[in-house]
Image (spheres, rainbow, N blue to C red):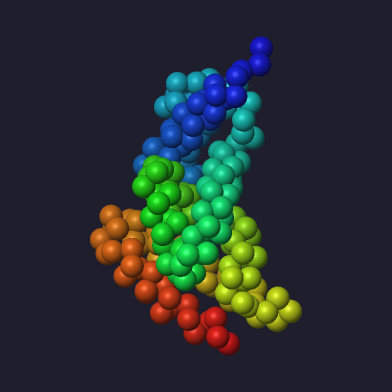
Length: 182
């Protein structure tokens, strides 16, 4: 029996919510399929219909959210400087899905999230920043820019967004400006 798309989406959302809740309590290496399924109210067979293992689940969540970040960033970058667009994007998406972003910025989620974000956002940011694609240093600059920006935004989110987004955007601009000009 095939599930309707909305049922599949709801099941995956429930499993991801369980992952995020448990991921705040335990490191990724200590999360089990059984615990996620018990928390979400599903059996292991249901889990394996969607994911190979816990790491695959984290990768899929990271890829899903990086896709949303990329789409929002591409739109926001048309109206703002790159650093402001980056912060605006994360502020909005965190407000929509705080549990996902709290997990993705946690020690359990950040390695996969950072890796996928660097892969998926480099081309967009390199183009928008006018970095030369034929310069071998560009990949290093972009890796640094994305990783540093994610770290600052993650710190800001962990601190309950204690500073206005404009201050964080200005800080990112200050930190990344020297790399953009060389």
